[in-house]
Image (cartoon, rainbow over all chains, first blue to last red; front, side, top):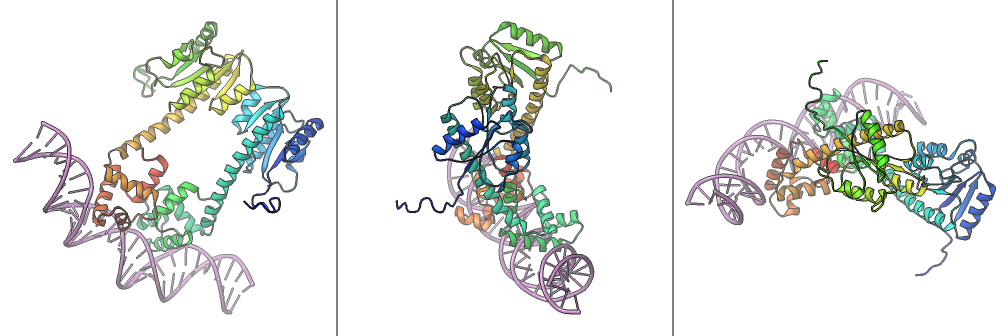
Length: 216
Length: 216
DNA sequence: GGCTGCATAGGCAGTTTTGCCTAGGTAATG
DNA sequence: CATTACCTAGGCAAAACTGCCTATGCAGCC
């Protein structure tokens, strides 16, 4: 195990713990505790400030106060959910309110902690969030690679793929040609190009692939 | 709209609201309120009693007290989750405990209500649970129908299907025959029988189907 | 012993797919 | 204006698939 330059170049960028809480003392306490344990922490006083930070794509998880002034935690969660950014959220809240916790978890939050909580509990949840994040990232990565292969398809080609995937019972050139109002010969031609571009060997393989990974 | 014998034969069996709470007053109150609104209610005083009821497959949803003596609500939820029975759960709890609510929702519960709650809120959640149930049931129904079609396949036929699904790039009779050490002609024969039995029109359709629904 | 179901395999004809060629029309682009 | 990309479409031949036929061997069952 030659462990030279362990700190130098990380293939996976360092994961960051984003902390959003309007209480400066809370931010300081969490930041301090986490940094002592070796985490990279970046804190913001409001949802707005967090949303406007540069490099919004940096991977990490979010420790989010529920009762923020302005845009509250739940609203921020919803904003983030609409973006398809992989960012697991751990809520923290001053007053243990069940309905809010329910909504947060239903919205995909990793957990909902009531203040005060022990740092060790938070660290546990952060590790869980990071594990979840790594899953999400690898899924996205796989999807991205696959979608890239389909991205080079032209409109017509894509249309034919859609039809084959949507109606796997009608994939003969004749049937597709009838649907599209063109010659079966042309469908053949497109099919050949599609298989070539996607490096697949049969319509079945293509359909199976798109069913698994989507068309993007 | 001739509404003769509306009550006689329901194609979908009547959905039941199961109530499990150790407090007889709570059971009575919920039962009364729901029956007045036309719901069919069946109540039990303990998780054990609910689990041991006859006809366990009757469709419905479960209004479940969290703080049951003996097996508590969360444990019952986990038992039910291990069975693959479609039964949406609405938790009710005397003391609003966030961690418990979090666990319940993560376990798939529809909601977690704190006592006391308004009947109208409960009714709302029950309707949501019923909607979710209907989705689950129709999904299961589709799966069941489909698995039945694959169930009539012989060992060899199933083996060939597995191979086609697992290696969609190698579905020509030649390739499959090579893998199995038999004649391409025989694979043709099996393929024809498979498509006939499953009422599919192409290998692609079969693969797409099995990918979606599994082989059972 | 006969019957049935399953796996094996071949023949033959018709259809389909696939690969490789040409080629015209259109729209965008340099 | 030339080039490029895309959609269109046909010819031709090899390969594959499909449907319908026969046929053998084996196992289990009445």
